[in-house]
Amino acid sequence: MQTDALITALAGHGDSPGYSPTPDDEQRALFEIFRQADALVSRIAARTNSPTRALLAAMTVEHAQHALQVAQLKLARLSRQSLVHELPAQTLTAVRVVAEDPAAFVAGEARLPDDPRTVPTGRLQFRTPADCLAAMVGIDYFEARNRMQAADDLLPGLDEHGFPRGPRYPQLARQLAVGQSALAPMAAAARKLEKLRPGIEARPDAARFAEEAESRVAESVAAGVPKDTARLFNRISDALDDASDCPTPREIRNKTGIVVTKVTRHFTYFTACMLNIDAEVFLSHFAESDNARTLAGNRQAMAAAATVPGREAARTGPAAGVDADTAGGPEAERDPQSSPEPELLPAPADGPDWFDHPPGAETLEDPPPQGGSDPEIGASSEGPTPAQRHLQTLLNLMRASHPTPKGATGLPTSKLVVHINLETLLGIARGAGWTAHGLEISVTELRKRLAEFGVIPVVFGGDGQILDYGRERRYPPESMKLALSARDGGCIKPGCAVPPEHVEFHHIEPWSEGGTTSVWNLGMFCTADHRAADKGDLGVVMKNGVPWVLLPEFEDPAQIPRRNTHWPGQQPPLF
Image 1 (tube, one colour):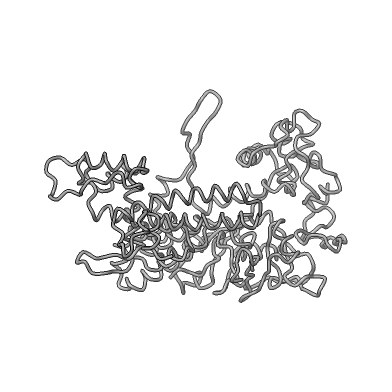
Image 2 (tube, rainbow, N blue to C red):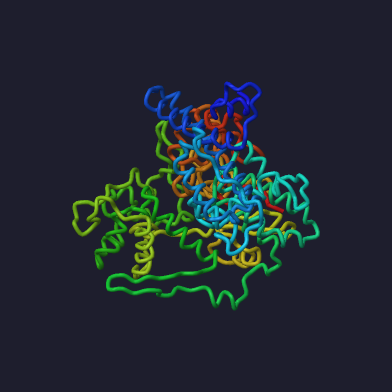
């Protein structure tokens, strides 16, 4: 149905041949469309039991919601262009009456007041169109202002001379027009780009830089991971900033440290600030203690070491609730360099590929039950929260009075893993390194730390390949796991945030069908996504030595190979 015919039918003038809808008829039709749409949705909800039709109706309404959000931008800009804040008080009152009860207006029994014919004199009811829109529509002032700015950034319009112009950010606008991205993150991205515009325009390559930056931002927003978009804006800001590669000693002195911010009768509050390279040590310990499959994350051992001071058996012997054969006893202290590698136990054909299981391995079969028979150990059946586990990890480490076997009493050991592109390390390309938990490390700091004990450098090529590591066996050794963690970051399914400490290793070409255990044939999945990949719901393809995931067709009809941008380093350098 053509728009004029629809307006004519809904406005009640369908029996008048040659009738041309008036602006009031258009407004009446708008009221009627929303009333009928509400009634239609209620009818579908009451009469339809089909899950197929329910899903289709939900998707239709969601698409309509997107269209309505774009309509909000158009009408916010129209409000500014028409100077709604200059309307007199009696007109504003009349408009509110019609908006709250439009029945008489739709029936033609009431009419809107005429627009003012002259410029108003005296004090205006509102200072700006945004003030008027916020008060009359019932939204926040900043929301009204953001809608007006988003209309300029994302919609075509007229310039100050009245000539047609395109949107200020055409690539973002294109994605918004096709419904590829939600309005709110797209508008927020446009505002951030607008704040960076003065710095971009000051560059000698402003046009190329602006186009490239907008393209990367549009891709990141479409991926739907806000943390990645925030990280991308930080990178763009860094590219515009001519500051030193590292913070100054004075800045480090003024900002870093741990201070007590508040003390109450039962609690003490701290605030900590540290360099990213030092924060990675904390994050690595926390990740170890979060994994209940390892002795370092064993809840009973952690509680025993913390809540029963002086119990040496809990600190030197096997962990509470853990079989001595699993904990390893004296074998747990064996230097792997001084004795041959233990022989692998046979694994079931359909068993997981996610860990080595030699005798004395520091990995549990299953997470031990929370709580226990000892009332002093783990009184709550729910177990500690992640934040409590992290705090307890620090307390356990500080309370350990002498060296203990690795992981034997809930004390984790950290590996400081630093990832960096080869070109950046050699000074060929601009950039930085990053830790396994996503913290950026400056090149200067990285070169200094590479010379220190305990830092494990994992160097990438231009396409993300691991440049070394590789041993063929069914279960990857620790060196290969470390390399795969560096390459993939964590679970490789797009949008999944399961960290590398909790993943399983998936053979892309199945082991039972001749697939090898190498970095070229392994990818990291969380338990649920590993099962989905084994069933064929998720596909994996290798491109330049890096695994890309094919989502199910109902999620991605185009079947485009994708990387999980949740993890740092999964995208090529910005500039």
